[in-house]
Length: 278
Length: 248
Image (tube, rainbow over all chains, first blue to last red):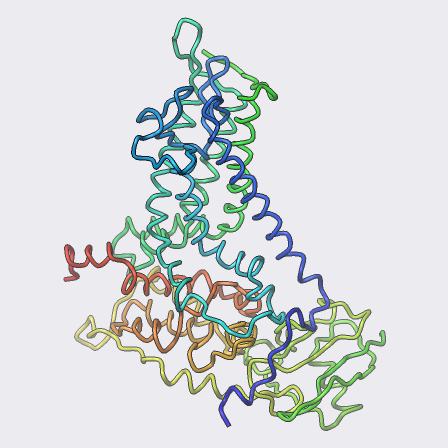
């Protein structure tokens, strides 16, 4: 008799002896991620409108850009990007939104993140739906085979994500400058400034606590004490990594809120309150 | 004193069923106390494995209300006792009888992991020198008491029966303790990727949740090993870096 034939029989989906509400956590994760995916997709497609620019707010001399659209590489005539308007090489039969050439980076970073992987395997694929609960499928490949073996590319998204942190930091800096009617920029703080600063702080907390970064900065060494910079870097990343799930959720929520804030300001529904300018 | 019903799995490899036992419990009792009380008063033939009764031998692993736990470390005030309390054997291993399971598969797996291979001694007297901060990381893994609760809750073994292809969280922790040891020179990454199937772990962190020694299994052992496997087998830039800056 094979070893597996001696094991207890696999149980049907959802079968468990747990009396607690084990389904609540995956349900909340499912709802949270779904809400973000639906909203961010909707927000990205709003950039198809070449006559309005609701992802950037320039009212009262402000300069806020939604993180879903930053860096704004190629915009529309109503708000040209860094390299001008829609690139000529962009196939005409594919609708263009400036978010399309941006969002795949943060999406890929989060999709391959070790925390998110564990969370969405549970919430979206029920593999397992929760600990010690029966599963819907008996076959299992894990990340040992294609397609999920591709998750091993996480560190490449990390490299790109680190560049985005620099860009978003610059966006937060730009949000601290307000241009008057004479075209002179004044340093100031408004609600939008705080929103963008908190956004980059939370995203940095999430990115700098990444498991791949923890490995690359010092975890790969067996004797980190021999390279003190690596040892210190490892300690710092480990500190953030300890609360990686919290950073992941806070930054996910806030990046969505930042887009909402800028969008509603740009549409004239919300009014950005300025605390002071020098 | 209050009266509580315990629903204990009775049977062997051919099958079994949950049997209700009602008994009086008092403040401070743990589940293992209850099992012993039932064994003494109502079911003399009830089989269960135990030893130290102090959470250090890892013998009394079971599933209490469906959650893998040590019976000796589960106080009755930690679980709801207003409804029947279920006590079952671990589901990842073959049943022997009642709450006792055959965990020998784990010991067979352990023999397949490459042993500790230290570098040449640092001093003429045959001793080595290590920095405490280098040892701290692997020290955590040495807390493991081999209760195999992590193996029990791991769905790759429990639900998918990948015992032939995956070594489970316990032995990934064991491998991490060797692989990250400052003195060790052995290379275990090819086996980790292939025969030991680290890729089967999909990071659900159930193992970390049930560890009675609070070892951060997923974050500190499995993910760092996965990253080392990425270094070796899936990272073209890393390969390039190794060509440019080979190890001395």
